[in-house]
Length: 293
Image (cartoon, rainbow, N blue to C red; front, side, top):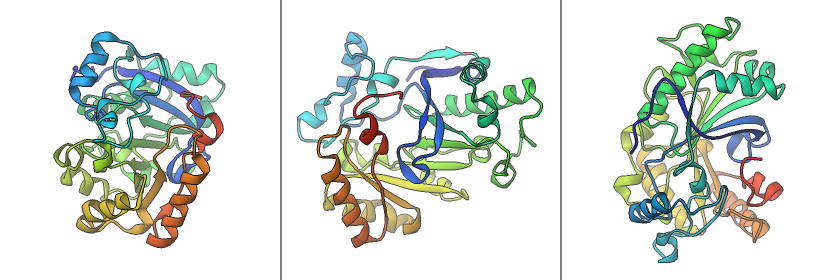
């Protein structure tokens, strides 16, 4: 895994849109997709290494990885073309300038528009440091930014009215350290099931899961394709970690509008049966396979 400069943001894409998944569905949001991931869902490391060598994917291209083709996974990461090799170190001022250019700076600063740190995997240690350092820089160039304590930020301090709102999207395999833990208002954890093709050791880190559950605002969001997936998420996550069902969200495993309604209906029926929160992928309904919109 390439070394990440904590004094820059390794951004593969960034864009203003609407949150399409999880409990913030429908909220105007600015996505910052950071490069590099520690998992390769639907793909073997050999396969992704070949992609890196060939650089053969078009920006936003959706494809099936070797594990999915071999029946060892039921889906392939739909953002691979974004995080695998795309990514450029950006000075911290880059994001601030982007927000101002789009006329959304004040709305981001006051929390009307959420900031969503995604990837790849934004909790990789270098990314954690970079996100914290970005906030320090932001405060240095705009004293009105509501950051009261860089060294010991807390959720209660950060999540006040009129303060920017940070969400982070993570696969839950890396422990989130302070001070990033205190800078995040909402943790959207998407643990991977065996349908990802990843081994149990690769996709389940008990320390990382327990750390997330220490936060005041977290959800575990699972991609499900059948009822066996639901039984697995209860067996491997909900029961052993005592995750409250009010903090469990499930959505269908889909990356296009094909079978969108049928798959969404399946999730909602399962929500009625198992008592978790059933949602869909709203952005797929609106924009199909198009990324960064």
